[in-house]
Length: 484
Image 1 (cartoon, helix red, strand yellow):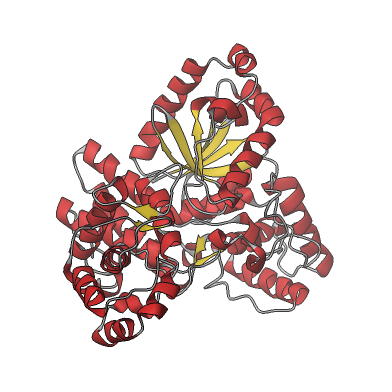
Image 2 (tube, helix red, strand yellow):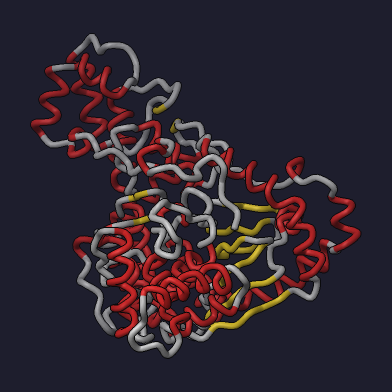
């Protein structure tokens, strides 16, 4: 399976800053009286901490700016990278970022992430201008977050906890979006108890959404739910399926997309209905090989699926030897999960989920195009992501368009994909989406673009392709679609 050259074999500590967890927010974000007093008393420290302009000469002007920052809803000047950065304006933006779930001591970085993830700017500049697009989105996002209960204040999820009406669903979608943003990020993926809570509540919310009778409204809700479903990076996967402890994770994009698909359904390791007795045997065997304990109840789901894959290849052996376990591991990796869709369908089934393969009528030609052009386009995408850019892949990025058109006519390709997959997304069904020699999770499609969660990228919704680029990497040549 494809691996991004820029991040292969790297430890999390070696990844670019954009891929690491955000720094803890500054104490200034609390905007309490003591913090304000410290700012007034030490204006030079304030300017140095935020890198936002020259030293403040007048304490009176500063106090006036702080009052604006605490209660104001507008900006006098620009804030952020290259901005005017008046103290009161800075505090307004800090407050709005915190309310929207983007609190960070690196204010320009927080603005940039907000622009990329919420405003969906292809070239975020890290600056908020008075009345500009970013400021309007910040004001809207912070007011929406304030209207919904904070994640910590929402009652724990339980059966029937989400009201099956638009108001209840809207409130829970807003709360889950805030929870997803606030969850600790490690290697680009959500982690900790927040992730477990997010998955559990997704499962409950799905039940409420299914109760909506209007199909268009139900489809919109599922689209928004898919957009907050957590992400997994294949580069964080353990080497349970490999012969050495060395991390070799370029062959597990497939089970990583199954894990993301299961969590979109609200499923976790506790929903596994396979052979638990053999799973325990495999767990102890792997622990002996890696020299550390595995807690399957809290393991990352892709790692849990690696153990489940070994169980599948043990067959009916009740007391496997070292040789039999190692052979099951070898077959699971080299002759099963890397060979096609059947392994993905089986792993979904072990969680009580039916899945099916969907193959394009032009699968042979799409696969051939992807085999030749996929690597170059994914390297372009990874390079931009490493540089902190989230840009559409297409246009001048795609070579030999006329040749592609002669093999797979674009309008027919687009028509088939939209006709086949839009109804599936409208039902909230997870789609493990194949391109040549690689698997991703489909997030959304429209007339212009396809958005995917690529486990070979650094974060969710990390690939946006034009239809020409999607064809060039062989997307949709085959897929595995789970029941909703």
